[in-house]
Length: 247
Image (cartoon, rainbow, N blue to C red; front, side):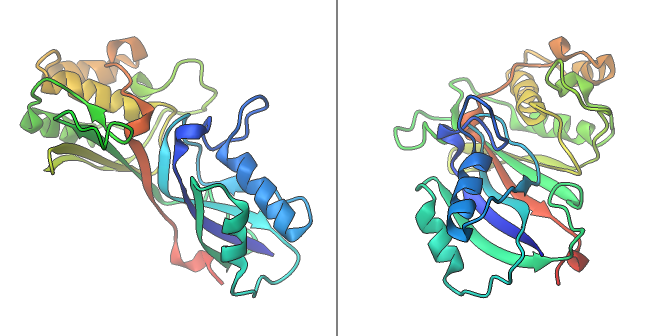
């Protein structure tokens, strides 16, 4: 039987979601906890892989188990096997062919920039000292929706077969002295969001123009885009699935 598991994690202590042979990952810790609790080896498949230091307020993964998990205390027990920076929120049965990665309709990320030095949020936000032009940054965000090929924002030497992504939403808002960038797409390339935000920051600073952004995307060259902003201010916030995968 296949189960979906919904979890969140603070990625500060981990080398991303996906298993790493010589570094700790969220996937490894979750698999170890499930295997211990269920007394059998359990493998989990995540909806995607977050980079080192990136957080997730919502991530789904699936695993297979041959028994019905009806114990109402199962989530409580599983959380007791997990460290304080990983939390499981829900577990539910899905169709046997449901896939946490391939069935996802969209993924949404949030990037947080603080406009003032804050001793309480420096671990959660990226501090930019200079003034940023949010109107220009929002104008630039709209341009992203006109393109599909985002090779210019992808990490070099990646093994993907296509650089095409369908961006459904991209916008900046100001909230409590923070600039918050939300972007939703059917899929993301490695380092894509951080490279987009770095390019947007350069536009907000006046170092890059709106016209430049068109040329950057068309170049398909990572070196033409902006810097990669720090990972610690990036959050995977939502993953959407078709309703019919549940039993």
